[in-house]
Length: 252
Length: 252
Ligand SMILES: Nc1ncnc2c1ncn2[C@@H]1O[C@H](COP(=O)(O)OP(=O)(O)O)[C@@H](O)[C@H]1O
Ligand SMILES: [Mg+2]
Image 1 (cartoon, rainbow over the protein chains, first blue to last red):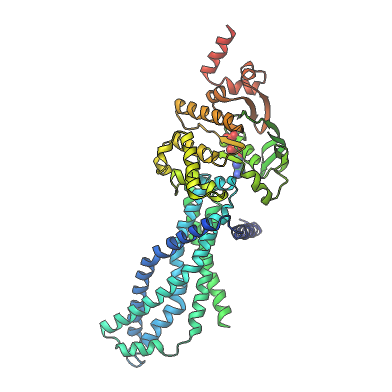
Image 2: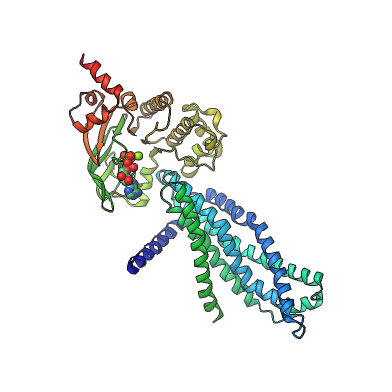
């Protein structure tokens, strides 16, 4: 494809995405209905992801602990293990990789759900009744994402660090006291604020980008499948780019 | 009464509707017939504003719908009921919830009043005892009837049915046709039925518009339809052996 055509396509998607967002953020028709949808999404995005988030974080924390123990080799202080586990979990693993994993789990779900409603004319049915379909379908998901993803990330931090400590002590690479000391040394609250700020942005990206791909699915079941793949790929790519930009912005 | 004035619509190079004019009368079942791909669905979607026409305007009882802002359209939208080609029932909701949905979103009724009204509508389509089923558990004919119940829940002035009996066996199809006819009289609605099924046309039509390649080539009623005159129309009407025999029998 010619470069300028590609650029035009990008502009088209960005413009349409913005338009969809502004339609989503119009005032909901019925507060009561909206609250129910919001709570359902909290459950779908949050509660139902706790298991996978906890599992991955436990293993990640444990592996970082063993890796670090292996690398410090004897002349670097043992408390470095606790320090490294904490920093890795708080700064990158939990705030970046957990949203990436959620993009796979929640994002594909959002895209296929909304995409199915598009190709079976359920979105037209909403519109014909006078319901703002973007607001009805997308806003609860975005808001739920903004609220719940940071919680999942905090959970992940605790799980990872906890698992690191447990494995460290169980395998004898670190004493509990050393780990605890490393866990607390040179700790800045700003790191957590920095991590959670990124997380909120990623929660927004993964829900809204996935919803966009579902909302504009056209055709049949095959197309719904494709839109759900696109949703995951684009959510992950945009999260990574945003990660770079936000890291640069927040650390300056 | 619904009037279409000089409606044109293209998708890219493809001119789908060309200067379409039509009048649909109150209290009557107005048929729009034509071959697959002739532009019937696009015409209906332009009429109800799901697709913006490139040119022309639509008026509902003298109110220019096309010129209205999104906000003001809502009022007219709530007077429109629509039955979609694939029923477009919300598959995450039960049959009763589907029918209650427009009431929940737009009426100020209490929950018991909503249930009562929804049950009335289900009773009207003879599905009073199917309320707790999910759409996936209903046959095609039942889904259409639920679609009708949902469309009439808000007491619409205008009813649109896009191929109401596609995919149904002839007997069930007739039941749906008759149901549409009866409720049109009962509620004194302006009903528009899109169809390519001659059975249905002969069963339920009061007025008929024939669409061919995006143009209205002929308007009239059942008697006129068999009399013929326009070659494209004759080709469409007498496409089947059955219809050709009827014509022969009439001549004898
Ligand atoms: N959203 C769209 N984008 C591009 N082309 C479309 C769209 N909707 C319909 N068309 C085209 O318009 C023509 C008429 O379609 P339609 O109105 O659905 O036919 P039918 O009379 O069978 O209902 C078809 O050739 C179809 O490919
Ligand atoms: Mg059609």
